[in-house]
Length: 84
Image (tube, rainbow, N blue to C red; front, top):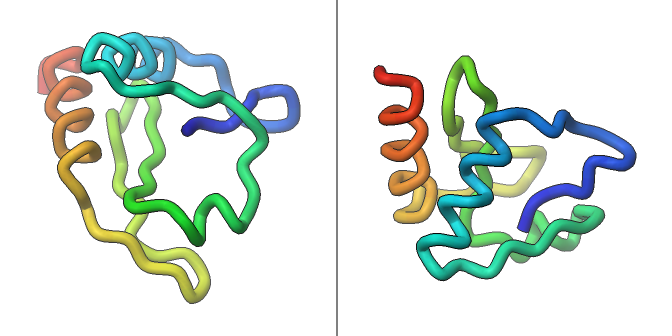
């Protein structure tokens, strides 16, 4: 799932590439408003941009997430794209 950009975020190059890569991996891509309940139910959370690539979110308020396999996979893809 990723946030709909009508109220926040940037339709950047890295986001577009990661969405394409996720689809290529056979993952369902759900673009919609993200609510606190979605974060509470999430297995992994990350942010991305074309400077830092994929940045895991491990904690927000009282919520905690591991750096999981999907985040690690997308980090590798982003590093290859950024050549870092």
